[in-house]
Image (cartoon, rainbow, N blue to C red):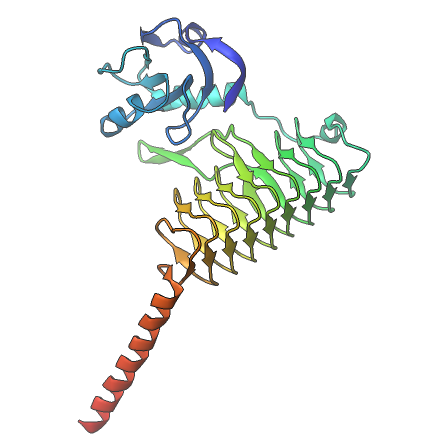
Length: 312
């Protein structure tokens, strides 16, 4: 999450009772988890095995539980519970606001937008020209909807990330402070679910089309002009290139990169990065022609075993 304006690091030290080590004149531009950080951002780390990854990331400020070496020009914010502090900052800057009957009245709707009865729209939602949202859809707080977007009945946009930090043998929910952004000419099918990012944004690229019952998890970036058939599921923080096609019931694991122009055939399970402009199939997904060859060999092997068994 990027802040609307830069904030002195001393504000965070004072408000959350943190000790600054390093550059005390830094201006903070936002707060992000390690996968999304930019220069000027705050991130956190509370496990030594991740110290170097966090300290050497693009983040300028690291909330950390003990003193360690760090690059010149950066700063550490020392405290006993870094995740707790990070989570509280996220909540303070994007606080919980339940949708009420008055929420829709806050939205500035263009005359060209068509919002059917029964649509629920949260706070601070932006809606573009020629948008059509069918009855029963839910549009969560801070969602941005571009021009010529259609959202069919029962779609749920901007729900919390399914993301937890395991501490003391229990799961603690990360406060989701990211957004969902639907770019121009996007179509969202009936019953789709799109989670907002934990700290960054979930983005559906311009011209992309989602069939019914597609699930897009937190922080996914879907490229332009992608086509996703029914029951596709994409796990958190995966990056999908432009012009990608996913047939029905394709499942994509978290934190992967799917190259531009890739085609993934129905019921495939993707567990590693895929190059662009190739056709994939199977579990785990591989190039379709290679996978089909494997299937042929398995059938032939099974026939040979049956033949041998009948002779014995």
